Length: 271
Image 1 (spheres, rainbow, N blue to C red):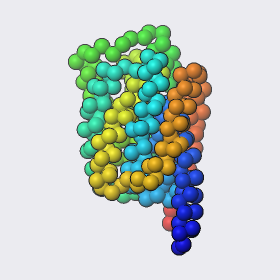
Image 2: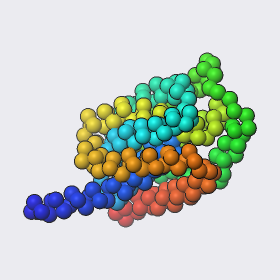
Image 3: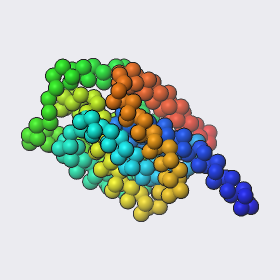
């Protein structure tokens, strides 16, 4: 292959990766998630990236992308730092455990786990359950009280979320957001912002482990960031101004469709 062909191939790859990063960034900022539920399967199937590399590279993108959203939520006072630190501390430990555990799972298992998570979250969002939680939280707002019980719940939740993030390359925010609403009565926008801070904390150790295992494609990470950084800014600004109920329903419908499509592809690959 000539130098010109190599350059063209690189440009095509960048052109494909930027929209993937943009989509994951918008979802990250809008819904307090890492964006991996979109970027992992898309990099896997659209760009043809190996499963473990797709997971590791996506995790590396999550940290800077989440920071952009955190900035906007912090400005609007939609961030509970003590809660994020309580669950984020154990989440980082879980992330290392989960990342190291990927060597015991094959690529198909990783993708099927991810598809299952996408389906569950999609059903929850599309059903309107999250909007009812938001309404309850808004009518009876209460702060994270830092009691031993609250800290214990936050820490155990963080450990589970971290392990999950390390295994499948997602920030775990799509589980943290409803848990924060249920367990601590946070309004949903505050849950978004607080979740993003945990997502950023989880991404750091997980990225290091994946990099050491050779699962991070630096060029791919750079290409994804070209889209994810402005995407996170747009998503967080829209979420802070918009009616989240309709956004969640649409997001849930997209997740359900994507979960079914990617699961079908994974199960029928090579058949």
